[in-house]
Image 1 (cartoon, one colour):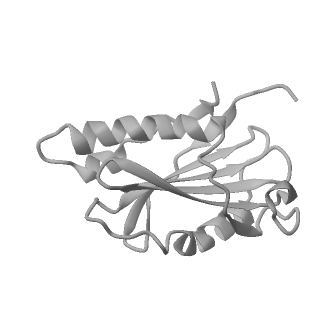
Image 2 (image 1 turned 90 degrees about the vertical axis):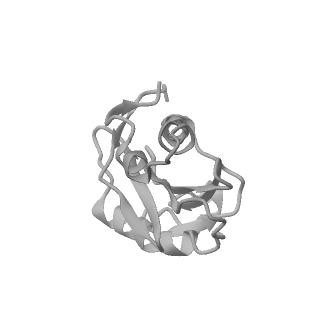
Length: 159
């Protein structure tokens, strides 16, 4: 299959376990993320983030929910730690190659592999790194509100 852009949407931030997370949804132009996949992903999110240790860094980050072209769906939760580093927690569904128990895109399981993201998801990471520097590290007074408002533009993602 030839490479192509996918669609990126930003449905607005969510508060999970005291952590403010921007949301990014990546899907196929002809097939938006199904409501049951979205619900299953966000139902799992508190558990996915449960082991993050509070180190004094503002409790913020972003989530990418990505619906693959096949049966796969991927949930990546990125959180800021140590003031300037990112940790990621990943879950997958519907992808037997990643040890998912079936091909149900709403049956998410924690992914123990050290994945950071694919080419579509990494476009968001690029933006988030720059936004964190812009709003949290460069100013004399960090501005979490402005960071949370600063999202990658919606539309095609991939190139």
